Image 1 (spheres, rainbow, N blue to C red):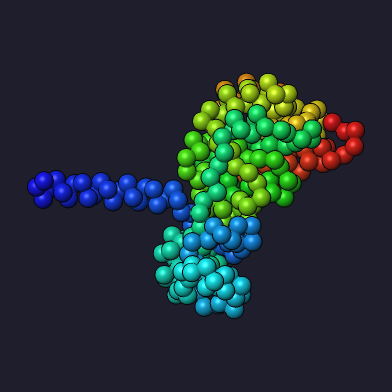
Image 2 (image 1 turned 60 degrees about the vertical axis):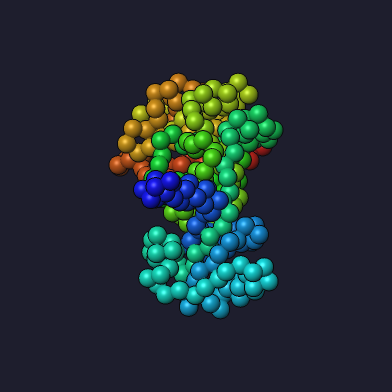
Length: 268
């Protein structure tokens, strides 16, 4: 094998190794995101990095690392920025084993509580909005968040996990390669699909909602796709007097109302 071919093979092998490593590791940053992960699944921790200011707050975590031979290291601000690939790490970065999403098929074919609630995202790829919605889902105890994807890699990026403030540890993530088809299957299971649409005739307060329910949120530019709209049992809007709402804020308002109804005895 000549030198040129050897270099080609080595480069390809390195690329494959990096791809597998990316699938086997997930970088968490932000205090609440990291500490929630450590409390929920400490054995998933692979490496720990922190600032000098966080040293005294991490005695328990460092002790765990020492007992289990997990590397940990104090870094300066610039080095932490590089490890986190950003500046919003709040002085802590954890490299952990990823929480791999499950297929939406598993969610739909599984057992759903009578008053169960699921959230689905249609074309929402902004990490800040994803994370904020995930955090809201955790607050209201939804049974799952359905997002686009194939389930082979983490469906929620590190930046979204930080914004979720630990929500990634409490809300199950499910992926769908075709949301329209997944919603059709939801309806076949008897789930009620509610789509958020700024142009809907029905308002959130007047709409009749049945349970189990799926709340579908679309992106801020195009809203829900036409195929997804066709799968909804009802489309609702949030009445207001000003400009349109950020999608994560809208999701919070809708989930608050839907959760109020599902916890109110005899109310639909």
